[in-house]
Length: 291
Image 1: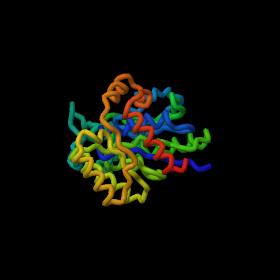
Image 2 (image 1 turned 90 degrees about the vertical axis):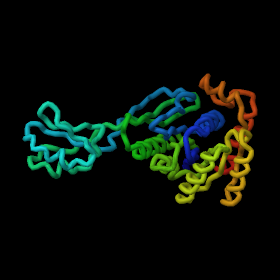
Image 3 (image 1 turned 120 degrees about the horizontal axis):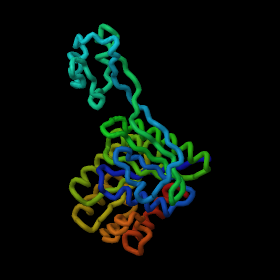
């Protein structure tokens, strides 16, 4: 069985990516939803998942001092380039939130009093929700291994999909163009880029498209709130034409979306122009995925 993966991304946060993803969850059948925004996940607000399995994520290492061996020589503090070591109450203390696990202090310590240990960076979950199954995660505050955690969520999603014989995985990707975004799209059959007709939105669209092209993944554009700035919308269409990209849909500004968000419901629950546009985009997307 082949499991197809659809990733929905944006070059920046706030473009309407999760709104589209949540609506797709209710429109699709035999589907697993994945929230790859592990720093600030919000897909769960609409899908209301019930966690049935929790897995701890140990994605990095930090330095720890064995005080039975420490002689307070201070060499560790002098070699730490992240200023993660302080001298407090006649003892050297490593501030775990500042430690990068670079290993310099462990190498420099003449007494062998410092070692690196794996630390808990977050958790990821298998859940059941209103639309079926869901895989999601939460990174602990201040941690920097979001790309690694997303990779684990993606592995979990495939495990669930094959076990439940699901034909499609829909990924609500991490915003931006960095490691979290690339971890969200690798292995996808098709990527939807959600943009908005603003100067910053257009600039971020260009950046995420370059990222997707690097991975040679077929992709198309959805313009959200296309009617708030027709000049920028036209610029996006011209850009898409120049890049040989298809604009697979445009969603109008619709105050009903605000009401749906306040009530934590998908937009397609309402009889409105935005819901109609999203349904049309879903039909276009199914053709791209050969569903």
